[in-house]
Image (cartoon, rainbow, N blue to C red; front, side, top):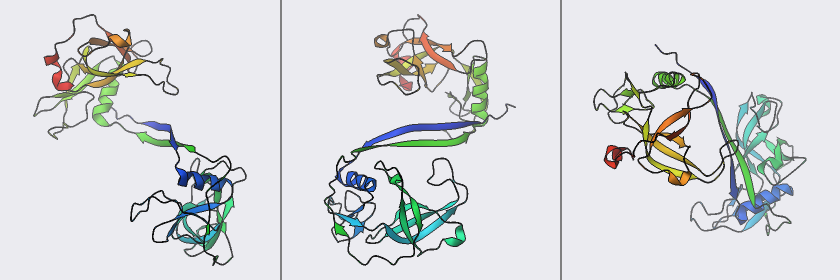
Length: 318
């Protein structure tokens, strides 16, 4: 029986977005130690502000300034902070309704322990020493003995010098991936420059990479079938944007390739041919990454020199 594989996997990318007038004013205000909310059609003040009324869907633009103090509405203790969380020591995640606001803001509360936190406790913002126009300009909340501010939120025009108009939010997911029996067998076979799939006992289709079950019939698959190594380009796209940390010059071609004997096309890069000469029906073969039989996967696929496949032979896989 094939040993089940597992490995750490990280999915990470920067998410860049532009800001409308409401979000721009909110984030720029944080840089200036000012917390802005937005007033809805019925007079409710929302913090953080949104651009459209959640009840009427009308566009919102009436900005108001609320206090930097507030009340905890609910909380949860975080005994083991993770990388890039607001505090390096244990803290509480809290929802804080700032004085003058009707909704709560999620952030961290610096407290000595869970016994020091309770719903209804008064807190205030601890501002970051260096502020750039991001939610992290609020370093955290801290306990506060003062009473709620009785004053109404003050109108604010949302005008600041050098307003923040866009943000880059890094997204990252760390987890351990266990591919399971079928895909472990598939990955082990790649080490020997073999590509294997599994055949469904009902519809008799061969799926590559194997999934352990037929996606059409829902029946477990166990019969191992070697396919390829050659295959046919069924469809493709031309990539013109260079990916960060990927040492491949653009433009290049990324294609769906139906390996001989497979009933499902897999993904692969096409090289060894000008990008504008790649076409549906092109016959290709793998070029393995690295050297020797320990190479773990095909680096790309190149033309075999065979005549193009007839469309009828792969049209079901387009």
